[in-house]
Image (cartoon, rainbow, N blue to C red; front, side):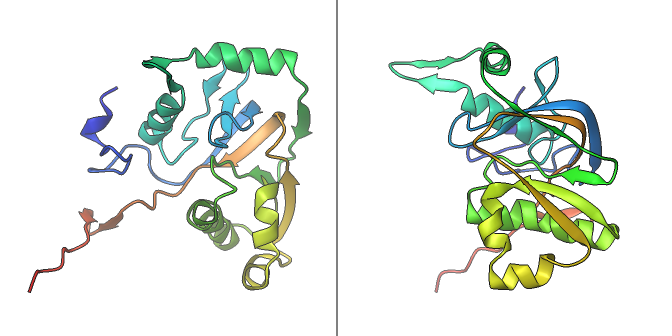
Length: 204
């Protein structure tokens, strides 16, 4: 795939990428392949071991970052066979099983330990859910617990609308009957169907 049509070298969109609207999606079984590289949690469909749809923002960005993660450089760059690594992990290492009910939704994300990603990717989706649904059980990474229970965020999110359940990002987990919410695209702003760019300051 030619990412340069849509993304710059840092992975930021230079034009509108497809499938970027926030959606509620479903998968029967999802394997959370924890801490692959750079604490990037990978979510895979069982038993094909393909990346779940729109795992990270949208289709283009999901494949871009997965491709970057599986590229290893020692003396020269080479790509590891990611599926074989995931299959080996699934069958030969211990994993936890979590079964979701109909009123339960999970929020996935690669960098849940990072404060900026917590705000832009997890808390924005919680605001979306707060406005859209009356009562939900929401599974979120345990790395968000400390921030969520701090004074400002506790006031916003810890109420009768949400019942939070925390999953361990240090463990491999198999989620069954998995309802998950895709990411909001917050890398650029659309205004009147056009991408709004920051204006450069004029030199005096």
